[in-house]
Amino acid sequence: MDPIGILGTGALAAHVVAGLRRAGLMADIIVSPRGAEVAAALAEAHGVIVARSNQNVVDRARMVLVCLPASAGVEIMSGLTFSEGHSVCSAMAGVGPDTLAPLIAPAALCQTMMPGAANAIGAGPCLLYPAAEDWQALLTNLGPVLTLETQAEYDTAAVFGALSGASFLLMQHLAEWFERRGIAPEVARSLVAATLAGNAAVLKDAPQDWADIIASIATPGGVTEQLVSELTRTGGLTAWDDGLDAVHARMTKG
Ligand SMILES: NC(=O)c1ccc[n+]([C@@H]2O[C@H](COP(=O)([O-])OP(=O)(O)OC[C@H]3O[C@@H](n4cnc5c(N)ncnc54)[C@H](OP(=O)(O)O)[C@@H]3O)[C@@H](O)[C@H]2O)c1
Image (cartoon, rainbow, N blue to C red; front, side, top):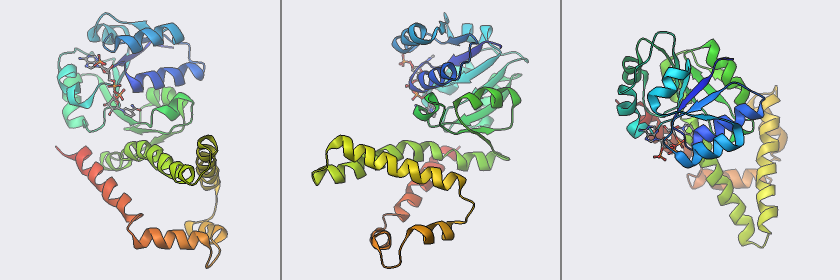
């Protein structure tokens, strides 16, 4: 397989490299030299090649995944030269194709959003827009690839990146509730993780609609109904809408 280039050798790059190698991908992976500690660790653990410069990554790989900080990404990308054969996939949240496509012309551009840590174990979804066969084939190594139909759909779906990160804090918050009441930390953590993982597995394959699933698990007048009613009364559920709206507004501004 063609070499894969990665610009931005930080947390996301480390997850992606781990996921690709875990899936058995043997292609050369060429990473940019900034983030030297991560690059050295990836060279040691996964045999990645550390390029001399960002341009050297681009010169050595047809497919280039952009994992740069969004704040600096535009400036960095505007200093690089791409050719027609290049296929660039940007994982930078909040840097849209109107900004990025002219900087990498005449190369092809697509965008991806992924949770990161879950992709390292082949279990995280990757959004993709627009459809691109080469990236679809590569990202499949990291978990299910969900291709969107329009830029607007992608922008909305990409908010899941924040939901994914926040879900860890939600799980921590819930585990700590059990801990404060005397449950051992490792039991509390397993309890929360296994509850959500089990229910997610049910949801993923359930043929029924939401109402049927909820009717099957919530006894009328029971404790689920009590908790949901308390969360509804205090805005605990609708607060998520406000948070997701704010992230969506930030990611689509300009
Ligand atoms: N973390 C995730 O799971 C995740 C998930 C989805 C999307 N993303 C997106 O992926 C991007 C990277 O996130 P991250 O969490 O991986 O950030 P990160 O850990 O800070 O990594 C960014 C890397 O880019 C490097 N860098 C900075 N300036 C550079 C330059 N001029 N040339 C080359 N490399 C440069 C940094 O090097 P230094 O350390 O030397 O500054 C760092 O190694 C962001 O746009 C984020 O929105 C991340």
